[in-house]
Length: 274
Image (cartoon, rainbow, N blue to C red):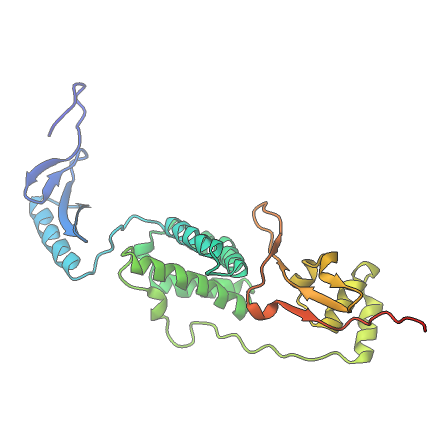
């Protein structure tokens, strides 16, 4: 083994074709993956290293080895998020969808999977994540949203060779939550009156506007005076308020869908005397 002037071992030393000795005394084997030489540290003696190299070479040819086995989920998620942000910047994805992905990453996925090597995440871990979120009282719709973000990241990793299989596809029937359709009901006049009587005065205008326009809370919070045409009796819905996260304040963003950009004609036009 080569050593430096002060006696410390330097780098790996070739023992034979495809087998090297590392400074720590262990063997490393070299094989080709995606047209590039790859090294793996193996346990055991020289014969064990030879056998491991043969197995790895066969697995690489069969497409059963990830290109970057040490990549963590957090690293791959950051790369995926950077790509998604670039798509939002050129209009191929919606800012609201990006906000949703960030929310699920920060709240649910990174705390559970961030430090795990993405190539080693299996279906049992994903099933355990689902049970954990359900045990915390998360709604099925929230869990489904987190799985949608996870699925997008895993598809990105699969396409780039970071993983060789998408474990999310291996969930069994019943393991993936299926949110029930939301029951929608219009309040009657008596219910509206009781609601307005019970709410704090500072929120009354907000609630009245929501009740009589059907606007979402995020759309109401994003309204500016320029969006309200009192003369024509029209509210122009052009934005919604994003979620605040990690010290980043909420801001006005484009609605998630084109259909959400609309004009609501519910205001009473002012009358003029003859």
